[in-house]
Length: 630
Image 1: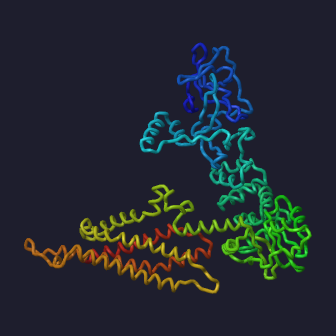
Image 2: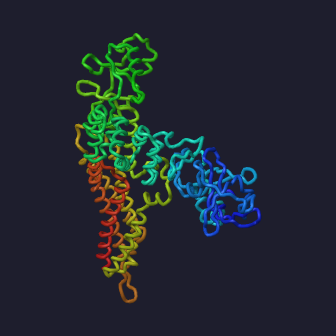
């Protein structure tokens, strides 16, 4: 008996051999790393629930039942203690947080271990497929395991140790689950954010209830889903939401407030302190996706005449939650930026040395209206962990730190992958990590389009009075050329868009791109047409197209077939050429969506091009076949 599912419904038998009921739960004390089973809950006659002490009354257990040391008249019933948890009621089939793997999982079964005579310990939760199969019936689990072993992919247990479990669905949330494991409030904010994104909506509030305001502020700033952030803020009271935003970095708070409606945002800002409100409103005054919007106003700047000792003392006086300090900036008497020093320079220098003597004068800085991607590129180019944002008079308005630059690069990378028709998890070897069905849907969907379109062509030809079952095979055979070319056309457009380096003094390269596409389309169309001529030459040698007098009538089947093939290849060549002429429209669409800050799916572009090309070719080829055969 290694699992809870195997113990449930076992008979409970006293020392005299009398059946008292059937097991329906086990209780454990939560103060141990691997807790002992302390209580046995069973259902007696008339479905009456009973609970007794496991340690006091249970003698042993096996496949036939749980056997007690005493007769029924000597058994004294007990109650669940404040530090006890019932396994079936409180853990089985519930969501838990795996605080080692940083994910939310569902408990399918619970693994136990016998320790000594009649004693059991809880080892952990089974969260894999085996637990689910076992819960249905142990025979199903055994059958699936044998089949999996035969295929060379054995079905392994997925056990999460008790010391790495944290419950979410508990009515008594103050209970301490384990003396050794990390609970939610001890995890890194980024890990808490990952867990929240995996939870059911009804459980997210419970997770936040376990965090104090500062921890909640750090966790919510790590969420990637803007809609989820807005949902979390809407679900909080105005005062709690305002307090949480006030504790966040101003740039993160500004990004979150921007997702709220105007009235809600204004209410939260007015509830903040004057200093926090001013800092956030200042950032909101800059355009979205610019240096001014993502900068922080927490930086260290001193007069160039100050000493190293002054700089070190200034850093020591900073609040504990002050933005990480990478550089110290020097200013002239009117507050303009004159130089920068790294922390290493300050540490190794003499305390009495002037900052002006040690600072690097050729400071790289950016304007507040510069696009955030260009800011990240500047930081990458010069290997900076922070870059100052200055106005026209070189007054420092704030700094953009490396963590914000990394976020920008990650967003840009995700957008580029999406336009390229890939997900963020596919950037490795082409599709190796993808599920087979997902790979087919994203890479070979055109086969399904081809099959459906071929059936439609056959049906339409039959409806038009042509023997569709005989003639649809020719447009069907040529169609893959059109579909694959349309797919490659969108790849050509996406590649040009991703590689295009836009300059402020230049317009969009639509004309040049149109001419390039027209040339490529003309070449490909010519290749398709010539391939058709090669097929005709191979299928119908010289002289084979002459009418043959058979059975008192002239047989022109070969001549008609050749004309149908010619029409199909001609239609394909024309559609290929038109497809590339239309490529400039896709490029315009990409630029337009980028200017309006809208994400574009490369897969959607691909599918739309393939469908349009399929429809145009199907219509042209069907009409061509009809005109030739009819």
